[in-house]
Amino acid sequence: MYSDSPRLISRSFLAATGTRLFLHHEDRIPQCGPVLVVSNHRSFMDAPLLMASVGRTIRFACHHYMGQVPVMREIVTRLGCFPLEEPEHRQQHFFHQAIRLLQAQQVVGVFPEGAQPMVEFSEPEKMRKFERGFAHLALRATVPDLVVLPVAIASVEESVNSGVPLKLLSFFDPSEPLFDRSGWHPLVVYRRVNVSIGRPCWISASQREYYQGKQAKAVVAEITQYCQTEIAELLRQGCYSG
Image (tube, rainbow, N blue to C red):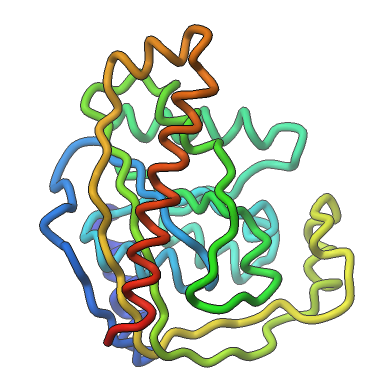
């Protein structure tokens, strides 16, 4: 029942918001085995949207403050997300949790742009440079047949409102410098959205071998760049169709 619950919640949430979802290249989604879903990120709707699109429960790493705010904590927990720890333990906690889930043949979701696109509004076709943590995760996880699946969320029609004051969020997470400013957390609600599945990338034994040697930086950069390029192209196509 638990495995179905986050998906049911996601579909119900999208129905309640009246969001029209158009899924492209569905045949690229692995139906079983460990998968690391990598996506662009602008809205609180991204996690349930990906869950509904991929059709498998995705365990997302979400921002620390989401586990501190009472109502939000209940929502992200029911969606199967795991809030990250405070900065001094964040990376270690992320790798430990994500590797454990992948070893259990589950799907883990990451947003390599970090928290900034959620706090600073950007246009649907724009994307920030990816952080490389997800590539390190894919190479460190000694999981056979691990698939990295890039996915583009391309908003065609949306509404943008003011969510909560950023200063209020700093009360729950004073360690986040993005909250130490005036203004409001934008609330992006998708009305029509294209979700495009990119070409999957299987992590090979040779890539893991390179990761242990002098070519470690190169193989991390290769995986990061592949996902960023793939998503950017799908995003460009998706934002201007539909």
